[in-house]
Image (tube, rainbow, N blue to C red; front, side, top):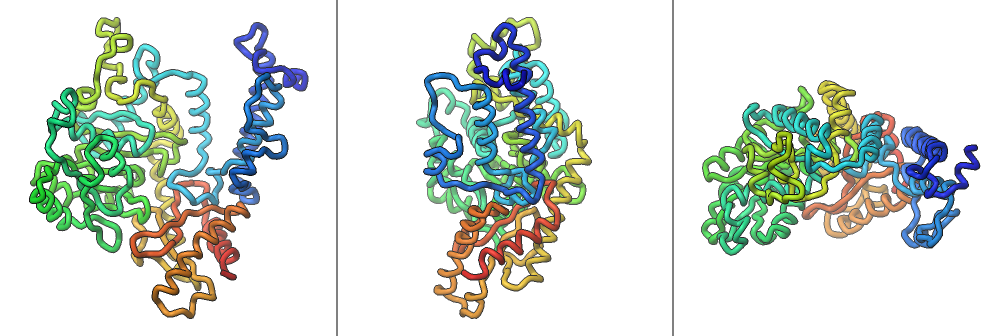
Length: 504
């Protein structure tokens, strides 16, 4: 029956009459493909990626064809397409994928994602999403209490990612100070100034562009050598901006910068914001997970004084993409800022408590269910399980930091022990080790990381990111957020960099 079933086309699946057997056969085969992939992802002998250039994939290879047909293909071909889609992609759950801040493959989170797709509902009203709406509320309250806000305050919503969460924070801050902007537009505003550190995420400038505030009105504040915002520089930047005619209203502090994993001094920044009556936002997209750890949460000391917080459980906490929350201290502000009361969705005369219709807090209409993945994983791990997971990732970072100091040819970008799980370093091949410091050596060293990365992708054994920063030439940035990664994987990474780069 199985082979017979798979020669059918999708039109014979449910809801077609008597489609149950065909649907069962198809989904069982699909689960087999997914299970094989999950198992393979955790095997160190498997590749992190099977790299092909765009033109190779577009031209089609080994029966994998991106072109769209006029006539339906068989379910057997559909399953082959599913298998190939995974085969030519990147295994972000592999223990040797160090490329992005979000990695790992959580089985409970994956199960939750399947359930969400099956439920296929929308997060705008209690009417169509009763259980998920309540789960989101429970999670937001829990996260607010972990941030340190009292039970009477706090609001929030799950968003498509940290960039959108940061956008919300600026949108709500602007509305808080100038509510008339919602109806009358930009003409009622003075020239507003935003302040953020030079190591902060690019989404702050992007939000300023999107909201019509202008990227030139984002004042970039100097950091120390470790990547933390210098409070005295923030203070003087505010004064200078006012002298130039800007009206400061918002400061973005970062808890876990993208490159260095640095934590801005939140208490000192909060003092300055309080003195100047500015909105304080903390972008803890990457560092928020440390709040789950008793050992590391003090690195976010002062976050409870923020007026809004971005926190991405899809990063350090390993929830499948996407799962990001914006938390706002003042309850009701999100709704007032965004509500338009569409009568086909948000009727006031429904027979249940319509305060649970959260759609008008959002700038989206359709909103994906992201809270359930985090809720189910929290059930499976408990708060303590998340804390242990965070601790392990930071232990891995310390192990790499120690190894880099022991091995020849490696140099740390900053000398201090990592605060988060980011570790930044150069690899210098033997041919460059005798060269004097200067522009010639820098030019050559700048080419090393990209060449090693290229060889790495072709081989598919491991994946790590690189970038320049200011005057610093290209260096590797290793980040840990995958609980599957062990010390042997870190040893392998360094050995592989040497293997792929020793002749450069």
